[in-house]
Length: 49
Image 1: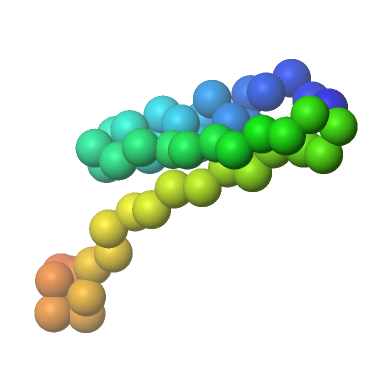
Image 2: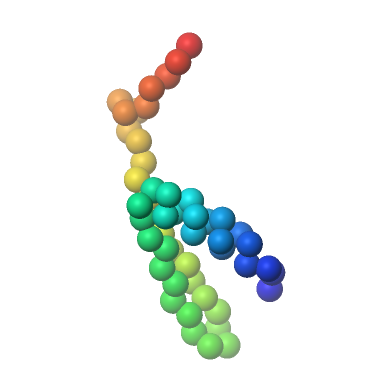
């Protein structure tokens, strides 16, 4: 167990991308967190020299 700070940071990042984080929890087994984020294709990336 930790302080939960990592989860708070991840939640903030996910929500900043207008996405959601999900959790499935089972007593005495543990919890599973999942999320999705949009990715940029190479054509969408802007490269500055």
